[in-house]
Image 1 (cartoon, rainbow, N blue to C red):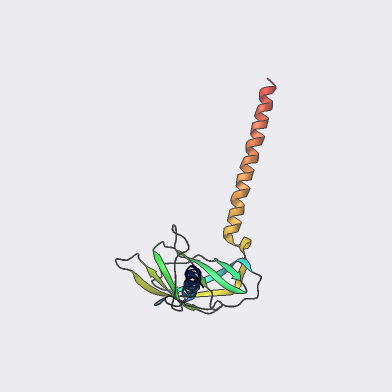
Image 2 (image 1 turned 90 degrees about the horizontal axis):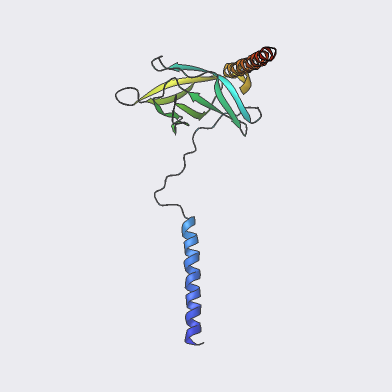
Length: 189
């Protein structure tokens, strides 16, 4: 074999080893990286996947804070998750069975999506508030009432929203009727 061909084969083999090594290296776990924490298991519920609302009772803490009830509830693959909205914007995280959950929105009241780990019995959660001079973790108990599950459009908030829409429709109809009758009066003169 001539020297040029041998060099070409060595170069091709080196590139092959380099590419194979790069691919193998990228598949290895990063040294020192922590494994993703599994977190608490959301309770199973026999409902179709979708959006619902659930009654929630809050106990614990100082008694000055509340959560919106009914709370939003999502069912995904038969597992239930709740959107907990606090009556304060000063909660920066929640802990459920040791797993940390961050707010799902930047503005307004602190809102978190957490797994519902049990129905009809208190579930202990910790919420960290920044409303005091230094952040404090406060322990609460949330009770998710399974008999209080309703479709999303049955909630009091949905009923109020429908009422507001009806008021706007009635105002619009009144404005059109007034405009038409005024036009007829002016045309008759």
